[in-house]
Amino acid sequence: MLTKNQLLEQINATMDKTKVLELTGMVQHKNFKLRDLIELTFYDNKKIAFRAAWLLENVFLKHPGFYLADLEYLVTCFPQIHHGSCKRHYAKIAMHITAPNALPIIKQHLLEIDMEPVINQCFEWVIDPKVLVAVKSFATEALFNMRHRYPWVAEELSAQLAYLMRNGSAAIQSKGQKLLGYLHPLA
Image (cartoon, rainbow, N blue to C red; front, side, top):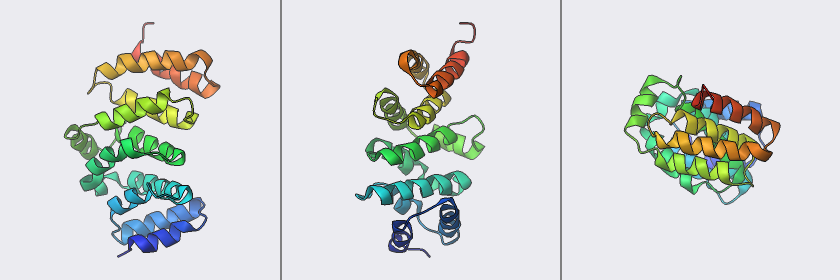
């Protein structure tokens, strides 16, 4: 079994994609607790928190069904994310777990979880001018994915996308046009 301190030692060093993939396998094969990895994403040292979030994204998205027991805990942690570098990874996880092609077992489990902490956090990221474009892109797609379960999200997302697109980058323009096209197909 891999301990939290052993993993902390591993992610304290500089990591590249190869190292992340190696650690992903190690976390999965040594039954590391996902909750402990989530907690490392809130570490005071921003570099360690970022590396833990990067690893969390890889671990969770590789085998999300394996971590069903921790899905609700992950969702409740969204409002606590303060490190800018971690937001991208959490937003990407939110986008994937809410996607139409998410595993049926994930979709079913999410129906039993209050997703409003994720929705509120995603809207905060969309609105915050200091948040990076990639975070906004993942967050808007996650919100779009949740529009059927929470119908009010579609109207608010439309308004936020229209606002962002007024002076937004090419990436925001593209994502906004795509999502607005789905939200308002005849417009």
